[in-house]
Image 1 (cartoon, rainbow, N blue to C red):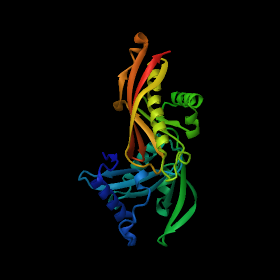
Image 2 (cartoon, one colour):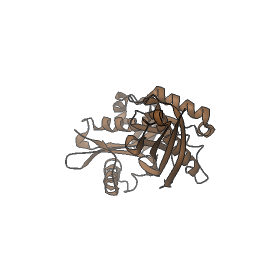
Image 3 (tube, rainbow, N blue to C red):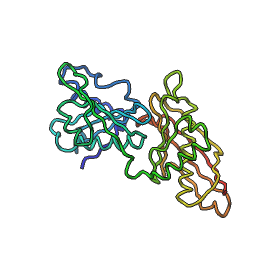
Image 4 (cartoon, helix red, strand yellow):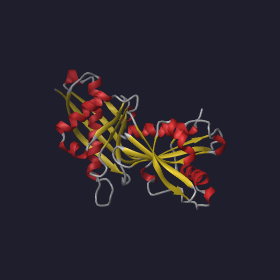
Length: 296
């Protein structure tokens, strides 16, 4: 069984781009480097390797707005076409897109790939560009439903709480995009949260991280049928890289600690939550928040 995964390090990325070039650019005598663009650092990258560790399929997704994204650079090794690897890459990218708050995906399909994308639910919109004077492309789109495991009702509840109690969350259009008891993803408006350098405001990153951590605690209270007032007692954030695209908040059970069972008896409980702010696959900031919950 083939595993779809992200490139893990610089060496893996080098092989990933090499495969892209060999499949998508070299046959048309395009130079190395033409297989990359300015959006690589803010994108989600996926690949498949064979048993020998050779890359045999790749694909990339990047957000274009808060709720839309584009798939590019899809390629499958010629001797593996028809084996289902393209579908595996698309499925993986669509799942990540949904977790990142995407509801609408577009792509420019080569003419011979249009039937493949139609089978996956993409609709043909229009004929677009002619690449290298000979490869006709077509714009295709697909609407995404929330991921199957997403807990919609409690996510809507948290969104409403944010809107009613935290004005900044409304201004940022902060929303839960995925929650399933083990993972929480949040996202916010891209354009509103940009500074003069066209990267995400440090203040917006901090707010996104803080409310993602607060939201995690809120979800755990709901799951344990408890209620309480959640207060941020202490916090630290490390900014690791600028976010040129869409920032996404993420936390997981492995990134949180604390015991809520003491809340009923002691009238107080504590939780620590680490939140990663993602730019595509990349962790651009790490926030650690210590939350105190007072019994209400």
